[in-house]
Image (cartoon, rainbow, N blue to C red; front, side, top):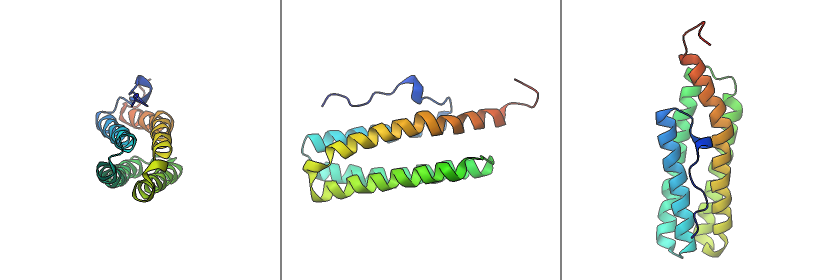
Length: 138
């Protein structure tokens, strides 16, 4: 499979924990797409299951940080997370039911998560940076 997505600077938030978790999430989706393309249903099922569990844990942690940092867009961000989890569940169902139909939605998921990171998570990362900056410093 030609690599559908490579990590780029636009996805780096300069927040070590979030960046590491996002790297893993993107890698898991890429591995899932590769397993689907290679017609490895057992591996695809396992990756889809792990991706769902990992994403829920990641989103829960991220949302706790949003709450503790009084992030004003937390509600909208939470709704995006819920949408991503639903898309993961849809891909997981396709992996179970019709592997042939799962590749395009998996690749769309990869594009969607990259878009979420580069836009919504970037805004959240900027919020965190501003909160860490001492008052009066530009």
